[in-house]
Each structure stands twice: as structure tokens, then as C-alpha cells.
Image (cartoon, rainbow, N blue to C red):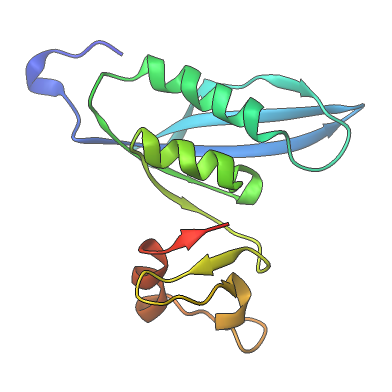
Length: 145
């Protein structure tokens, strides 16, 4: 991804997903979001029968993509819960990449100003309820386990 100095982007947005294809295979995908399009950067086929791929495999894939990017560029990673394990989140913060990843309702979080761990889903009282404006900022400041 060579650029002349005048063309350097401020931030890249990456989209991650995993899709079970069948026959014991899963496709992991990391794409670059660009002008309302997703440009694939890496798409390994993984021998995997059911469920999410391993956190080690996901970190390895994201590390590969990281080496493709210009050094020091800001990254925002968005995707489904496939990449939402604690091991992956810790690695994203170590790089440091910003991220928005769907989480299971059973994921434990502790807000920065609190000392009590709660299930992520405990902030939702009924099906279909969305708590974005007030809760999202607080969740960004939380710990996880």
C-alpha cells in the first residue's frame, strides 16, 4: 500500500468476518472499507467444523494484515462477534487499534467508574431495545473478562 506523502490516509477502516462454508471449512475475511465498498486484503480458508475460529488464528490473520499497512496509521476494526474474544481484544488494544465488535450478551464488562462486573446484555431490558447514546460511551471505557 505505497502512497506518496500527499496521499496518506488519516485512518483505515477494516471489516472482519468469518463465514462457515461447509465441508469442514470456514472463510475468514479482512477487508478494507473504501468508498462504500469492501476490498479484500486477506481471506484464508480454515479447516473448521463448527463455531468460531480460534483467537490465535484470528490474531495471526490480523497481524498479517497489520504488516500490510503503513506504519503508524490509525486503524478502526469493525465486525461481528467472531473476533470478539478477550485474547483478540487485548491484542487490538496493544497495537493500538480502535474497534467496534458485536458482543454476546453473556460477555462480562465492568465500567471504568464501577467495581461490579455485569453481563453485557443486562443493560437491555427487552428484545429489540437499543441503548446506544448513553451506554456506548461508557462501554468504550470498560474492562472485559
